[in-house]
Image (tube, rainbow, N blue to C red; front, side, top):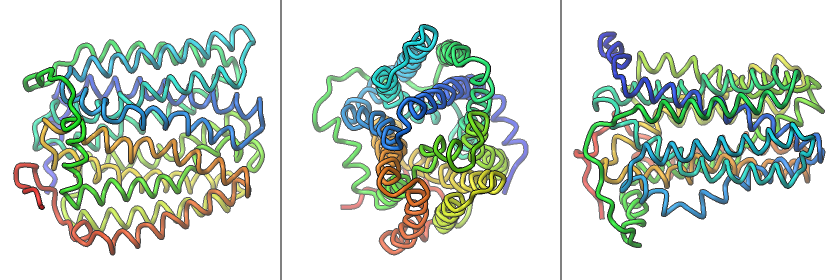
Length: 414
């Protein structure tokens, strides 16, 4: 049952609060920068395929560095990795801002900035996830996960909305704000002191770097969770096509684009706040599959809509359903993984979950280039519904999952 006193103690966890604020700052900067890059690219090329290529460029570093990312997160100071990644994000923002100021923006420069972002986030995301369990007591982890998710959603609401409004006044100012947000996040991360001893800096070996794959392979629930989200997000990609919907279908301009990008986060934020006070404790598996189905249905509604308020409402529902799924999946991965393996498992989870967003963006852009944006979004929504049904049959243990179980209560299966 929910205990208000327990929820209140999460606020008193200084390290987690600093981390939460850093997460908000870096994600606001990222969202504003991505909005600016997306609008600039579509203005320059008017090509859905180029919007998809933005996603592909961000996906490549996750594939290229997957083994190194996990090993580094388990063997080196996770704060240093996160700080370095956020500094690279600031460099990317400076590159775009300078080009805007000089009036020398081109497709290749924007792609280069996107590549820097992709490299930085490939290291930052899984390492940040691995930090969370070391910032709070184990009993508070599900609430911390919900609060961590809400940090992301606060940023995804404020970032695009603020970016869209400021962009109308001056794209250069948007870039400057991005740099400031990234710099603030670096300072906040530097003030964090996680509990627990620092892992030994052992040299990387193939067996060590592949340890995360072996760990997930022997745990059907983790395998089901990771592969489920990979397939659903790969079939998604509606967010990547929002510049097309904002400009050509709903005709709402940069401000409307900012609202569309913020809408999923509105639903996700409200849901995350609720879950941070009243976490899901029973029938976890079936609830996860249910919200995946809702995610697919809301994607279909968005694809069919030509009325701006309905499109916003569909994206709000999409974000709310995704937030429930994220909290369940993230909690399951972190609770069922010992700290010595969290970096490698989180890196794999990011590859198949987080970075699949960018690969899904590429998929959406290619299909939109061939058959149109509406068809691309519809394909993703219907595909998500089918995946939910198939995975319920393929992973019955995941469907029957009732409660979270700590890693020390789980045995490795042959």
